[in-house]
Length: 157
Image (cartoon, rainbow, N blue to C red):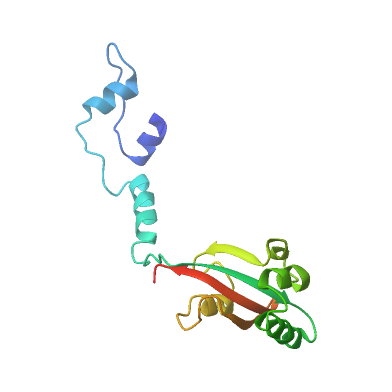
């Protein structure tokens, strides 16, 4: 912070030249006035600190894959593909590569690991619901379309 800024904020008084040093350094070192706690810089730091003071830390995470179906008949197509996976005709990853309308199709539908709030609400509710079984295929509708979802792991519960 410059001397001018310190003066403007009232953190230091008027500067007088001193022998053998810069005006700011000599004055700040000898300043009898303490730096007030309500200075703008402290207010900004306090604002950052307080912004998250009451927010609970959610340490949960999940790893999941999905197959996205879009357009008319998406729900019926999802039901058909789900049945084929459950009967062993297709693996989930191969079905994602073949049928998914999401770019994750190139990874077999894998979304990787994510925390609550990173996905759309309906998807999050399904994935982070303890009643949703690991490695079982569930169906959920979102504003993107109909998804077949396979939750592969959860941590932090």
